[in-house]
Length: 134
Image (cartoon, rainbow, N blue to C red; front, side, top):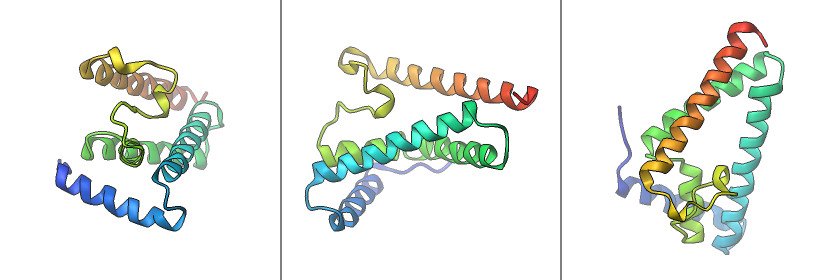
């Protein structure tokens, strides 16, 4: 499968930074806007996937999440988290999922395993919901 290299990632981050200039010239503020979008998207989509009745909206959200998982593979991580890191100039930021965790002492392997466990749990719950129409 196709993966984006560092040079392509850098071009994408510069492109997004330039496009966000219409909101503000302050990268920290623009990063906060991206963070809010990222957080709201995660909260709303998790609510729909876990608690909303199985319907077209549920399947649309599930499809969107599958595309996000694929994009995480292609970009070697979440592109929104990469944008937040770039705008904030903070390589210790791991995204809204980990906002309450102190990951500075965790190895990159442990963080990767945590992500794999979260995705496995999410997919298992969704499979059970669809299978039993819960």
